[in-house]
Length: 178
Image (cartoon, rainbow, N blue to C red; front, top):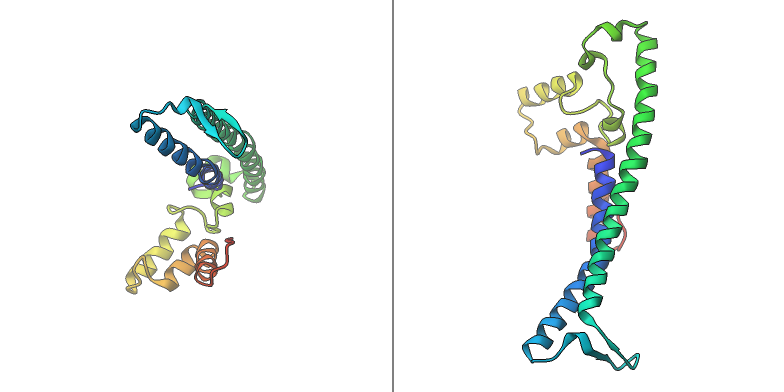
């Protein structure tokens, strides 16, 4: 998963966490009112001393939630990928310069450095990079399976440490995460 996909996923989760409980509660009230023969379009809110159309409110909340998710997706598509692409173009120029143009004639997978993978916490590149293939081969040959703690730290140090810190924060009852 790229850093842009991760940002999209986390943003979508936060938007849904804000709207879905309220949407579910209003849907439950509408269902209960309809089962009792009451009109959910004429719900009396005693706190505000007004009549509320719960069906319209439910539709508005659903539309607002979907609009915010679309807005988030557009922002991620527009901004995040644009920044990654810019950094990638600089990295590609640096590789051409360092290899004195040899990277232009070699197959791309030999000299390509994927900036998105590095930013996502994989400093040695994606799962198919030569470094990671060799590393995984060594781990497999000495009997360190995919779930081995040392292997996880070496393979993905940033996310492994982040997950460990988040687990510790959760166990200690603190409400924030990395």
